Amino acid sequence: MTLTLKAAAPAWESLESPLLVVALATGPTLTAELAPIDAVTGGALGRALSRRDFRGGRDETLHLAGGERGVQRVLFVGMGPASDRTAALRRAGAIAGRQANRLGVGRLAFFAGAMAAAEVEAAGLGLIAGAWDFKETKTPPPADEQRAPLEEATILVADAEAGTTGVKAAQAIGEGHSLARRLGMLPGNICTPDYLADTARDIAERHGMTLTTLDRAAMAREKMGSFLSVAQGTTQEPRLIALEYRKGPADQKPVVLVGKGLCFDSGGISIKPAQGMEWMKFDMCGAAGVLGAMEAIARLELPINVVGLVGSTTNMPSGEAVKPGDVVQASNGKFIEIINTDAEGRLVLADVLVYAKRFSPDVVIDAATLTGACVIALGHTATGVMGNDDAAVQEVIDAGKRAGEPGWPLPLWDDYKELIKSDVADVKNSGGRPAGTITAALFLEAFVDGYSWVHLDVAGTAYTESDLGTVPRGPTGVPVGTFVEFVRGRAR
Image 1 (cartoon, rainbow, N blue to C red):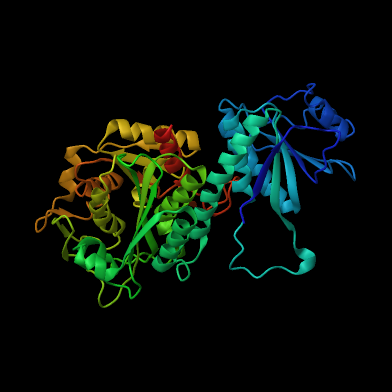
Image 2: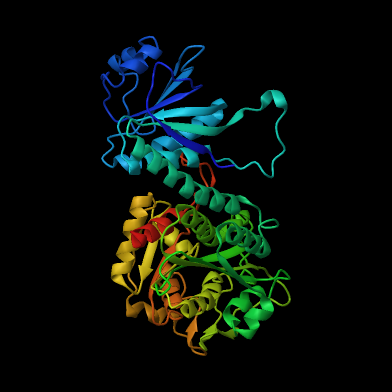
C-alpha cells in the first residue's frame, strides 16, 4: 500500500505526532522558525546545534526524544548544501521514510520550512519512496517483533495552496512509482507476461483507457518474426500490450511510451552465467516503468494523448529456442541475423517500435534494461539517452533531471553502424563489446520510421544490487519519473 500524504499548516502547540521529521541544510542555526521545535525537545535541539552534534550534511540524521504526548520523537535529516533544494528534499524525504519504517511509528509529520508546490511534491515523493516496502512473498515475523509500517505522512507547510497542489501530484506520481517497483520486485514465476497484461487491464478499467493485447497468434498475423523469435523458446504466451490514454484534443498526436518487458532473461542459448542470474527478473523494468507512468498520468488527469506499449515475454533455452546464426524477419520486412540470443530485448522492441507507427506518434520514447555496456559507461548513476531528434533527446534529459533521474547523451554516429552490418541479413543483433550501448540503439533505430524517437538504456538505473540509502536493493522506479515529467512538460 502506498503511503498516504496530507498537507497542513504548522501548529506546534497542537501537533500530535509519533515522529516529527525536520529537514535542514548544511550549517543549521537555531532560528525563530526552529524555536518551537527546540521547545518540544526541552532545548536539546539548540544544544545539539551549538555543539555541532548535527551539521546538516547530506543523509546525516539526529534522533531526539520528545514527550509522551504531542511530538514524541524528532528526527533531523541533513540535506547537505542544498544547491538543488528540490532534489535535496526528495532525498531527505526518502531517508525519513525508511527511518520511520524502522522505528515502526506508523505516521509522521515532515517540516522543511517554507516550500513551494514543487518542493512539497519532491518531499512527498521521497517519503513515498522511503516508506515503500515489499513483503508480499515473505512470511510475517512473530507478532511481538512486528513494527507498524509507515502509512501516513503530513507535510507541514504554511502555504495551503502549495501544500494541496504538491501533495496531490506526489500522491499520483508516487502511486506510479510504487506500482513499477512492485512489478519489478515480483519474481518471474509470478510476474509473467500475462500478469503484466492483467495489470494493464486493471489500469485501463480504473482510468477509462483503451486496452489492446496481442498474443502469439496475433503477432504471427502481424509478421512480428523478431519479437516471436525470442518467445519461441518458452511455453508462456508472449504479450504485446497497448494502453491508450486519450484526454487531449482528438487530433493531437500522442506521446508513445515503450517498455521492454522480459519477465525473465536467461540469455537463451547464449546463456548467462549462473551467478547473479536471479537479478534477471528485473529485465522487465522498462515495461514496469511504462505501466507505472500510465497510472501516474491518469491520476494527474493530464490533458494530453499518451499511448503505452509493452513487449513482454521470457527468454529461455529449449529445443525450440532461437539459435546464434538464425535469421528472422521483423514486421517491417527487415532481416536480422541473430549473433547473440542474449541480445534479445532489442529483438522484442524492434517489432514494438514498428507497431508504434500506427498511432501516428508525435514522439516515441522507449526504455529498456538493454545493455551491460551502459553500466560500464555510466555506472548506476545516469541513464543512457540516445535518439534521432536532438531536441527531443534534450527534452527527455531535462525531464529526467526534474524527476531526479539523471540521463546522459551518447552519440548515434553512422560510423558505429559498421559494427552491426551482417553478411547474410540487413542487420545483426549484436556488434560485440565495443560501443555496445550505441550499437544496440542503432539496431533499434533501424525499426524507427517517420517519427521522432528517444531511447533510454536503464540497465544501470532501473534497479540496484546494493542499498543506496534512499532505496534498498531492488527496483528504483526509474524511468517512471522521466516519463511522467516529459508528458507533463508536453501537457503544459
